[in-house]
Image: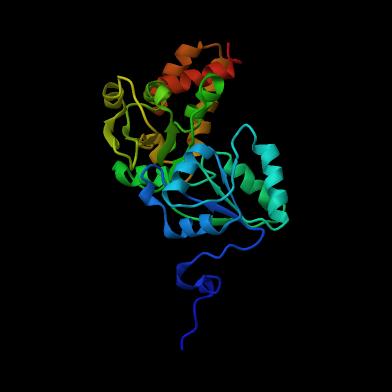
Amino acid sequence: MPSKPAGDKARPEEGREECGRGKLYIVATPIGNLSDITLRALETLRCVDMIVAEDTRHTRKLLSRYDIHKPLVSYHEHNARQRGAELLEKIAAGTSVAVVTDAGTPGISDPGALLVESALEQGMEPIPIPGPSAVISALVVSGLPPQPFCFLGFPPPKGSQRRSFFNASALASMTLIMYESPKRLSKTLKDILDFWGDRRIAVARELTKIHEEVFRGRVSEALIHFGCEVRGEITLVVEGNASECASTRKANPALCLEDWKEELGKLIAGGISSKEAASIIAAKFNIPRRTAYSAAIEMRGGS
């Protein structure tokens, strides 16, 4: 009889999950349609001692759908550090814990990442239970190159951090993915247009839900399409920088960023105004003028 692959040794018979004592499970749950949960995720949620959720009210709907009755504990950005320490103590004492987020895979733009980091620091080995992800779902239907890609999370809401966020990725040649709230969608589309230019974009809204929509077009067209009130969870997939600057330095796009910033600094040091310096750099390096101007303002100390 042929021997089983090494990876099969710990696999429960007939696909049933057998939760071990003192284990931390990172469980992916549906991003919308409750039928998208995996069989292994359901088995895990049924066999652990405790389920940790970002929003217990939201998660209770999922558990009720599948007749799962386990102690439910909240873990979110406001109590993450204190609650995280408590959870790790329980795991160390032998409690098996499953972590879920409101939608998708824990640790992607949510506090789950902090719990995993803390667990690793204490020598624990988190166990992933894979499943739905809005990042991958949006990417594969975007019509844009699926690899390489870079997930940027949520853009900062305002100020210098927001400008730095868009500046830092302005010259990246890979496909860029980010999350955004419906209230800030219009603002973010405008900033993408100003900092990155009128690129191709896919705006995925309410993925896997009844009102699912995927808009594909240019950023300027997306601004018009989403000009009215927008609702639902949103994932943006944006074309990478296709300029000569990016294409000639694909091996290390950061070099291109340093090139234009260094030259911009020299222009400013030479007494040229921020606006004029930005215009020169934008024309020479084929980047959005807004990107160069924001960098010039930061170099002058934000004045």
